[in-house]
Amino acid sequence: MGYPKLEINIEKLKTNLQVISNLLKKNNISLAMVTKAYCANLDIVNELVKDKNLIDYLADSRIENLKEMRHINIPKILLRIPMKSEVEDVIKYADISFNSEYETIEKLNEEAKKVNKIHKIVIMVDLGDLREGYFVQKDLFDNVKKIQDLYNISIIGVATNLTCYGAVLPSEENLSKLVNIAEKLERDFNIDIKIISGGNSSSLFLINENKLPSKINNLRIGEAILLGRETAYGKKIDGTFDDVFKLVCEVVENKEKPSVPVGEKGLDAFGNKPVFEDKGIMQRAILGIGRQDISIDSLYPIDKDIKVIGASSDHTIVDVTKSKNKYSIGDKIEFLLDYGGIMTASTSKYVKKYYIL
Image 1 (cartoon, rainbow, N blue to C red):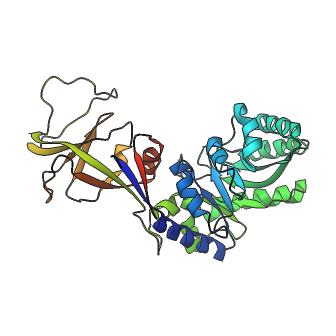
Image 2: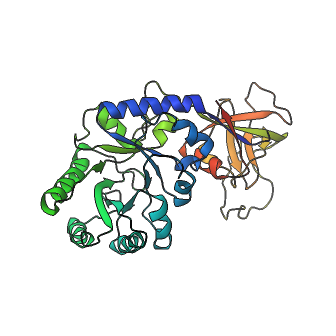
Image 3: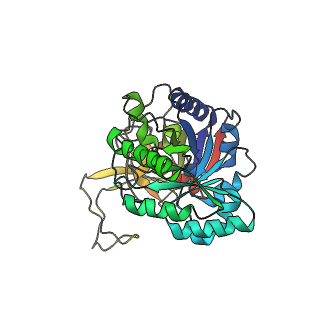
């Protein structure tokens, strides 16, 4: 096994899944397990779906990942609103897709008609985070009228997305608006709304505070399963692990050097003009991993006396001056990751994946 490598503790991940699934089921909420952060890696997914009672839906933003999971007998949701260019694959590999544009839904209907399928859709509602979804209710209801004339499309639910773009927190107030829209669709349009999806891992704190509207019956959970925390405030969830994913990197250089570059400064490799604090001479270790592989801001050294000070595309520089460990060439330095770190490390083909069963 080479380096850098991403270690994934499958048993700890299973425990996290069990805890989250139990929490949702106690509150009559279905679980859409989001697989996108680790690219729906089948070495992970196949282990997690062994107990099919834990997961109600598999959800991902990329149709390529749903295609990889087509052998798994669990309904699959395409989370990202579809591109018109991919509607053929959406009909083929997604049981349900989230949508906010009539023009695209019309194309989905045409493709579903070709293969004699009824494609299920969930209507996205923008409650203020200003990412995808209908923001003006009249626009939503006018489009629903037109969608009802598409015989190969079935509206089965409504959903919203919060905290991803605008960092708007889910609340009893804004999620009640989603419930009200669902009730109006049932009452005025005679639509059987099966899914009222109240967001992602950031909505979990509302369960503990007894503020999640009772008619919210689905959540799309990724980060809470991976990192054992809700994402509105970053609070750890009891009984979960926060060290499922660990990045292990190799030291390729370790020298004393100044803390401020010497010479006239221009732009760095990414077009930025960095600013440096003069801390005198420091012990600087260079690791064989860079921005092409990982989001550097997502690295949290397990050795608390190490500080990440910068990176280029291929190298990451860490200050080991205060570390009690004396690192040699070839030694390994380990990091925990946040959600962005898991995504980038999982996506990079240059980061090896190692599974602890």
